[in-house]
Amino acid sequence: MDLDSATILSLIVLLIVIIAVVKTAQIVPQRSAYVVERLGRFHSVLDAGFHLMIPFVDKVAYKHTLKEEAIDVPQQACVTKDNIQIHVDGVIYMQVIDPRLASYGIENYRYAAIQLAQTTLRSVIGKTDLDKSFEERVIINEKVVEVLSEASEPWGIKVLRYEVADITLPETIRDALEKQMRAERERRAVVAESEGAREAKINVSQGMKQETINVSEGDMQKQINEARGRSEEIRLIAEATAAGIERIATAINQPGGSEAVSLRIAEQYVEEFGNLAKETNTLILPAELSDIGGVVAGLAQTLNKSVKSPQA
Image 1: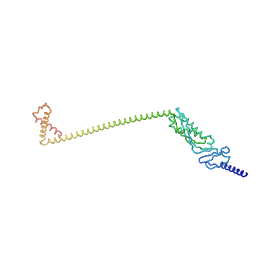
Image 2 (image 1 turned 180 degrees about the vertical axis):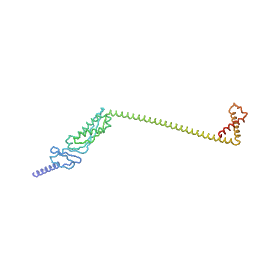
Image 3 (image 1 turned 30 degrees about the vertical axis):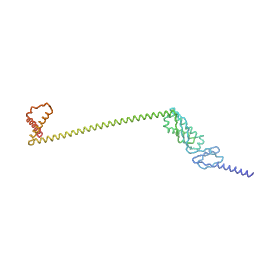
Image 4 (image 1 turned 135 degrees about the vertical axis):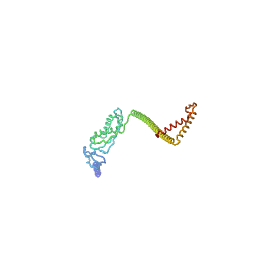
């Protein structure tokens, strides 16, 4: 009976020692912080590592993680500036920077941050039109973070950022927006088609203009070339005529030249008179026909004067 009492006493003492050791030794994980209370009052904050406490006097009242936390903000109804009800949900990224304030500054900082984010988001959305609520998400996020950071400073936490996860529209508004987008796309298609037609007409007109310019320049160049050709032709004919006249004059001044000229004139006179008789039924005879020699002599004399006058 005494042995049993001693054994029981030893077991009780061993149990007390084990409990004391458990209460005394405390291991804090990395990136964590434990808030210790001594006799119900704040005593210290334990960082990562091994720590010893006074059994039955010290107690770990709060345990906090110092890692960045992502807290989901439930979906809520918001009314935009143009009186459209939408449902918005988001995510808060926050971190405990002061474990003591996070323990005693507020009852539940996670719940408080969620509620403040929702109220702030409703206020920001209420000042924004529906169209801008999609375009200005970055501005909305920044405003929510600004309000949360100012309000959460006494709580010992830091709000790093806020992100709008999704914006849900009523079915009627989605249908209206889809119709609006379809109309806008159709308008852009019509504008693009008209712009294409206008560009095509401009290109065609510019092509016709350039073609007209090219044709006119070609005609002008053709006329210039033809004029130059005619000028060159006239010059060559004049030079050939002058050379011929010069040779005739030289030949006339040679012995027997006058007689040869008179003979040539007489031949051409008779030949042309014969051609005149062939071309018409009516024949007009000159009065001097009986005196062909006199006519030829007169022409020869005129030719001799013309040839000699340049030499004079």
